[in-house]
Amino acid sequence: MNILILYFSGTGNTEYIARKISLLLNELDFKIEMHSIEENFQIQADQYDMLILGCPKYYEYPALNFVRFLKENLPGSKKIIPTFMFCTQAGSLKTNFNKIDKMLKEKNYCLTVSRSFAVANNMVILESFSMTSEDKIQSNLNMAEEELKPLIADFIKGEMTKEEPTFFYRTVSYLSGRLFTKLFPLFGVKYSASDQCTGCGLCAQKCPSKNIVINNKKPEFHKQCIFCMRCINICPNQAILYNHKQCKQYKRIK
Image (tube, rainbow, N blue to C red; front, side, top):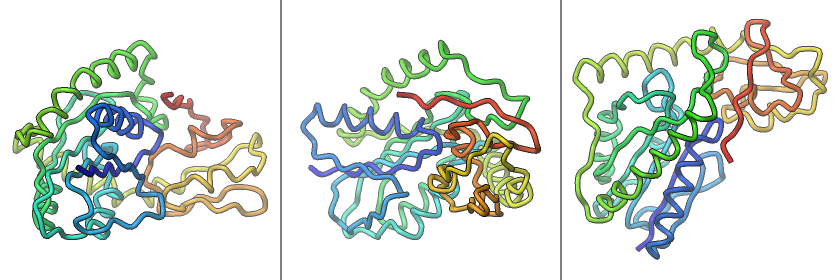
């Protein structure tokens, strides 16, 4: 049985969970193929028997660049494909998967398992959100691993295990995700680089939305930012500023 794991990860949290899922499935002797949407990877229709999707949650809604990728690049299937989708986040709130569930059904994918995993806060530009302690991160990761085994067992058996947030929360999360995405162009231009910047270009190379351009050995920030925080967290000199302020860096989980 062939299983595709497809994910987007801003700072590594989603990739970490995706790799844990891959290891667990490998132990069960399934054939696993894992790809990030940032790879030059074309999904072939009906090549896989099962699908696993993962992305972060931004402003309480699944990352819209990932949702857009699925709409544009996930081919329709002649057979029903069981699908497991997860989101990574800072807290423990449930996720509104309803719109994605509907879109998947239109392509003949059946969302049977959906789950949110608390990992860590990486929204380092907001002072009101404190950094997650290392102890708390480890506790979250331990809990996620404990949850994954029974979830994968349910997925393999075809049992429905879906998060069901309230109607009010589904509505608010969808609207907040859409609203803040519309405001990203206004907020995204508040990035800049300090004198510590050496012009190495790493931020531009790694930006998933190609929002950063190096000009005269300094990064310029445009209006396609998705606020994944990758540029801030990978800068070797901690030179990326937001609103002229230096931000703490979130350490990628190993």
